[in-house]
Image 1: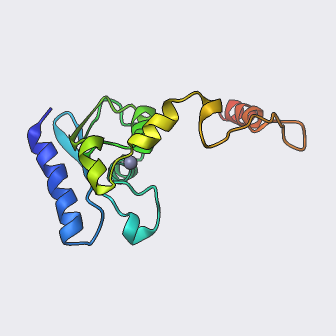
Image 2 (image 1 turned 120 degrees about the horizontal axis):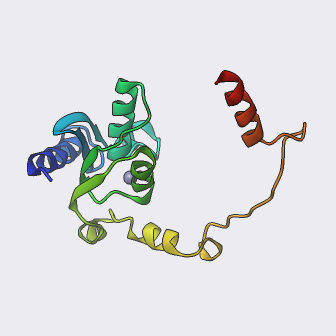
Image 3 (image 1 turned 180 degrees about the vertical axis):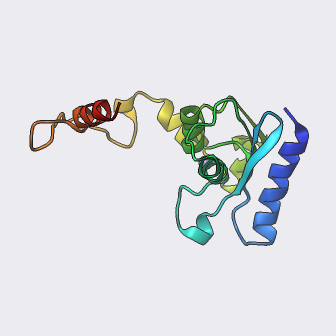
Length: 156
Ligand SMILES: [Zn+2]
């Protein structure tokens, strides 16, 4: 944990509010003690609900390196990462995350994702978003997974 990077994330979040009229979130992605990329929340500017600060930092870093993996990186975020960002951090191999404001800190401002964390911790069949498994293949009888396996075997 390097508090300078956490301060940087908090500074990005504050500047996003004061200078850009954005939401109060910033993130700094670090690898081997070096800043790979930074991001701020851009939902209000882009109308894209996935443009959280952490997502933007990940997008910038993976685009710059032309590789979707971020193994061994650390995320410094001004606020506690939401389940979407936390999931992506798991998927790309980020090894640690540090945040300066917890969901409890954000609750009075309407900036907590604790409710979604709680929802996703329930068994799938008890979650408010109903999910349903309906096995189905493509029209030619081949599933997308089988097609992917066939096509990627040809390449290899
Ligand atoms: Zn998020």
